[in-house]
Image (cartoon, rainbow, N blue to C red):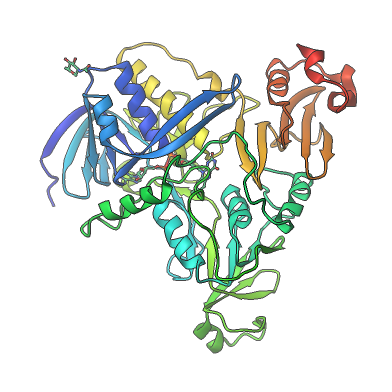
Length: 497
Ligand SMILES: Cc1cc2nc3c(=O)[nH]c(=O)nc-3n(C[C@H](O)[C@H](O)[C@H](O)COP(=O)(O)OP(=O)(O)OC[C@H]3O[C@@H](n4cnc5c(N)ncnc54)[C@H](O)[C@@H]3O)c2cc1C
Ligand SMILES: *[C@@H]1O[C@H](CO)[C@@H](O)[C@H](O)[C@H]1NC(C)=O
């Protein structure tokens, strides 16, 4: 088949209407207002950062709102938003083809196509992955009729999910020795576990946190549904949900119970069987508990559970496929497009940012990539600046935000701040931990190496984030303070200010 006629060329093309893509487009359009910029995105809506707040040197907070793309076009007159999915990329000819058959040219391209959920089995109807508003809606619909669900995974999404659902029995299978392994150590997990047993507070305690949708989220969802015409391609995928994706969606099962979570540790999924398959199964080991369920899940610890459906929250795989064919992108082990310290992929004039890319520059000692909202924004913004610097032939250095990993979120209704090598990632045996914990109130962990602070986990209203961020950034020798560092009777700020 012959490639279609090139419809239009743009100086900059950005693919993906998630946080990374939208931030990149905004940066390009405001820095170079007369440049022709195009945003090509599969979904009908775009994600916009709202109420951005810099809390300290590296900590930031913001909300995310799904908006119609016209909002962007009104703000930036030289920006064109194209609603279609990219089908293929030809880096030689600097063109992209969309699923509706159009061909667009670019001078510089930034791929921000995000990720899609890693599913356990692609073809099982009883396995659900949560990624975008559509899948969250599907989850809610199925949950309302469910008595028992099995949640697989141990990252942020699984953590939020098991905490937020009500009226359903939850079996939570984690591959690690403790819950929340991506974010916490066993101590922090122990601190959080009682929250799963307690009843959820009626009104969520106030806590500054990024919101996913600020107002009338349910209407946003409905609009999302309606605007997807019947002819919209099935390959189209929306943006990843952000923090608070569950706000405004009632996550309630069919049962009257408020919460019943049991955790199965250190196990993975061995097999998923429908009730028919179970009956036909020759295996003697399959002795499920009583009752009849639509689906059965066999874990590697030998237990089998029946349930209404399985939620797979085992992370995301970078959305790279449409871009790979015919090109020679260098891919990282996790499947992401490798990018250097200018967010450039291995293909000329092609940049990437957000969940789709893997940061392959030499990282600062205190930073690591995690596929999170803040990093999607930071990378999109920095990629835009790098692309602009490139056409202006200006030098640009790796941004300060990549000096120190920092993340602020909320788990089990506690404020959570993570700094640097918060879990002693890659530190080797010569590190030390200091801990302070008040049950039900706060959990403070400090990671020290050579007497200097290299990471921290702060759960609860500790008010320590700024001081600790400073101590990590200035790498002051803390040996003289010893354990006094965490003495609750000492106002640590007085020490160091
Ligand atoms: C349920 C859930 C909860 C989460 N909770 C948190 C949290 O609490 N805190 C946090 O920091 N992070 C959280 N995350 C992660 C966070 O949402 C992502 O890291 C972030 O949204 C990534 O942004 P992105 O712009 O790279 O990609 P995405 O937001 O995934 O956007 C990708 C965009 O690309 C478009 N696209 C994809 N393929 C194509 C194509 N072929 N052609 C054209 N367009 C295409 C999509 O339509 C979409 O607009 C959560 C994720 C999920 C799924
Ligand atoms: C849009 O681009 C044109 C030409 O490239 C330029 O003249 C015009 O000023 C730009 N618009 C804005 C609002 O900057």
